[in-house]
Image (cartoon, rainbow, N blue to C red; front, side, top):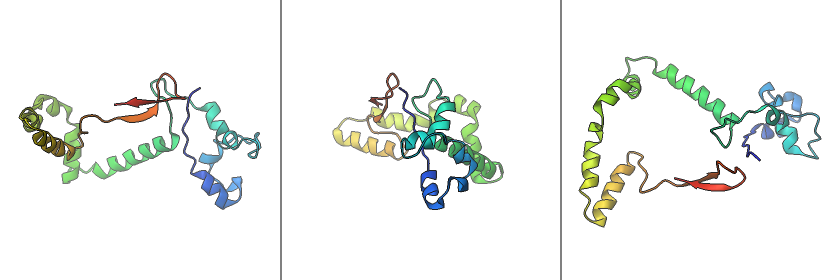
Length: 159
């Protein structure tokens, strides 16, 4: 069985609206009206979506709401940053300049690599880990529990 994660904030909307007819079409098209919500609320609220959804083969879940928000956010960010005269526009563009990034190789990381190689004591190690954390580098390992790729009904550790 594939684990499906759907965030239906519409549940709160439905409760406050008092009627399914007042919900947005983007929500009502996910619902299965042939099911009595008192018998199987999940199937009622998500049945049409579940029937039509295609979970990518390289994923263990699909999150429609998060995907939609991500697409909308990316569009907003691209619009804001499309003006290359601003500093943030230049910064954003530099992240996309893969030719320059490839030509630099490991040069931008030289100081961090030197600091890692110079660790001799536990205190040195903690200092380096603290510095790397400022840049979002996880200390030692970054372990998360998620549904397993082989069996989505069981959680597995990923790191």
